[in-house]
Length: 94
Image (cartoon, rainbow, N blue to C red; front, side, top):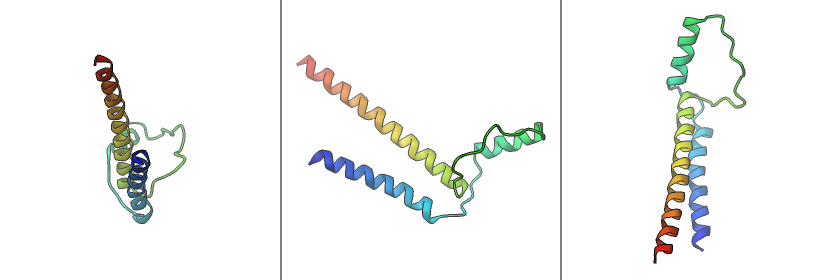
């Protein structure tokens, strides 16, 4: 039961992260990638990128949201692993 609730909560978090991506289409936010692109164009105007992204997000804020979701998932995985190993260590000490 508890395992099913965890998966349900994880699904809810993913839905909360994806729904705004679908609803907000023309969001704009300039981040480090945009600043780097402008600097490269200024230094070397003839530069051609090596590849194009497979999926272009609808706006700049969407890119930030995706980065935040990725960071949160990574932190969750690292925290889970640390707790799991700490629990195993405590169990072996007893």
